[in-house]
Image (cartoon, rainbow, N blue to C red):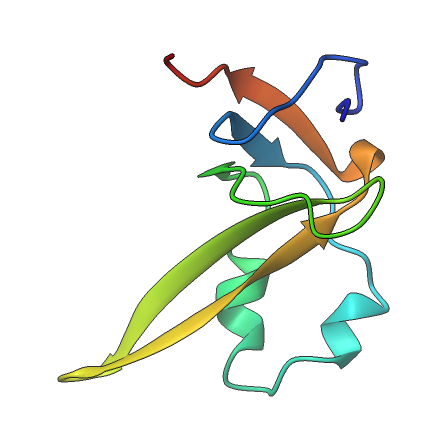
Length: 88
């Protein structure tokens, strides 16, 4: 898959989130939205290609002692850019 600039992106590569689709923000619960919005302009490892033309990045956070939350984004090419290739 390629990023916004046409760079080849593979599993394990680090990408920067450039955009979050507004229609996606209607999906997560209100308590999860700040974590998802916090992904904007930050860097994450590509952990999957869930659908043709989409890359996936994930996050986790602590809700309270011993309880964690998880979320992430499925991104189209224009929504991210390659920062670093994975070490092989």
